[in-house]
Structure formats: C-alpha cells, structure tokens
Length: 194
Image 1 (cartoon, rainbow, N blue to C red):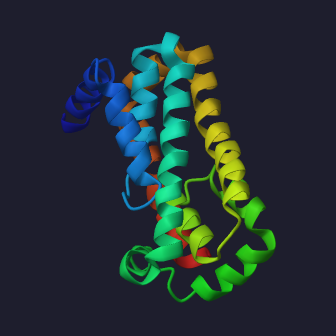
Image 2 (cartoon, rainbow, N blue to C red):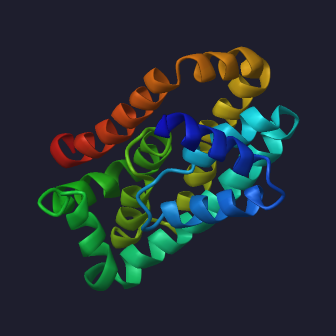
C-alpha cells in the first residue's frame, strides 16, 4: 500500500528533530509560489506530538505570514516577471483586474476570509501587493486568517488527537481521498469560481 507507506513516512518525519524547520519552510514558500499547503506537514506533526500542537501552529502561522510578505512583494514589484505566471498557473489572469478592483474595496475581508479556506493563499498575497493594499493592514489580516486556520486545526487535533489519529489510520484511503478532493477543490474554485 503506497498510501500507508507514505503516511508512515510522514508520521516518522513529523517526529524528526528538524520537522519544525521543514514545516516552516513549506509554510513560507506556500504563501508565495509553492502549490502544496503546509497542512500536509502540520497535521501529521501534531498527531505525532500533540503536546507541541500550539508551538507547531505558531511556527506555521509565523512562517506563512512572513512568506506572505514575499508574495506581497511579488505582486508589488515583480508582478510581470513572477506574479503573472503564478496567477496564470491557477487560471486567474482573466479575472485579475476585476479581482483587483474588488480587492481595493474589500481587501481586508478578502484576506481574512480566503486566508482560512483551501483557496491558495499565494493568490491573496500576490493580489495584495499588486493592489498596493496597505502593508500594515495586510499583516494584521494575514495574522488573523492564518492564525485562525492553523490554530483551529491544532486545537482540534490537540483535543481529539488520539481518536482522530485512530480514525485516520483505520480509514487512511478515505482520509487521503478527502484531503486530495479538498486540495483539488480549492484549485478548481480558484480557476472557475473566482
């Protein structure tokens, strides 16, 4: 079973002494260019060491917000060179101008709400920079949205960790399929609904 081997490997990696650094790196680059969300490491790390759930969520949040500044910089200074190819990858170039106009009016709420969803956060960070959204407001909204997302996951896994871990291990194929559906659903939502 490839899925079982991958899950066991992720659980071992999640308990590794450098796992926090790896997750921080993934959280950082996911906020600007990388397509895989940090949840791929966050969840197994908390399941492997529930006593560190809130430390893990803190590192994930901080790294994601700091990475968001890189995404903001891409949108602000490097939109043509890097931002447009990233937006084109997600099929968002045709909607970008309308999104920028909406962003100027509702930017803070867009960052807070969409930063908690499966919609790729990098789209929000790049759009924030491209719209010249106020950097301080971007920072506050990012801390709120990313913190709420990662701390909610941490709190649930900390509180219900052993039963959740047992559920995941007993129904690994179902859980993996659901995660992939949510991940792909986020990409589809970005491509066709935004």
